Image 1 (cartoon, rainbow, N blue to C red):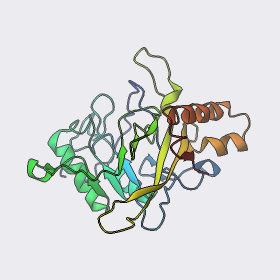
Image 2: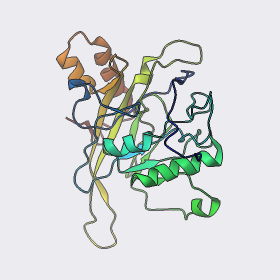
Image 3: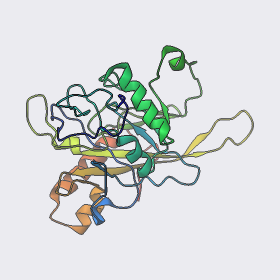
Image 4: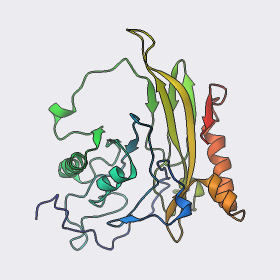
Length: 272
């Protein structure tokens, strides 16, 4: 079997928690109402449910495994990640339309890992940007028509800010998380809270004009370590179970951080 063959199913290796890696999750139905389905060992997140013609962008931190490690399993955890082959299909099934594949872990499985990641992403019909199979494919011209800046890699909630006329999101947190720890070894619950950035654009009002942000929103979310393992809307979780003080604390922290650079006065609201 070749290095990208899906028949080599991941084994029982569990990634180690070495540092805070956060959580982020697409929006849609409340995951807390029923246990999520599993896609070949990958927990299914809530569907982002973009409006017709909308786009849902996922930031993929780790590459798809290309080489066998740990007694034949293609998967490995921190510090050099190799992800299960089912991730691309799970992202597609969750409702994402495109994927950013650039991160500090892009080369964790070498050039073969990049090729396998992009092959799998193409195979399920996800658009992608960030990494390339070769230098010629990765070259592109600089763009001056930037309408929105979305930061990645931050593993805990980060602020939103409107700089001049451009919305900037410094970071969202990661979609799926586990027990997160600081470098000092202390458990860090911030790594299980994050936000979804939701921006609605209005088309140009006249030829030569640019698209503009008509509505800026964020959606809070938290990873419930379970069992069952799932991603929740902390507002719904706190309403349905008043004993979930952890969700109430996560919601307060996410909202405080997201709005910490004046985004509310610029028009950012928490989505209903």
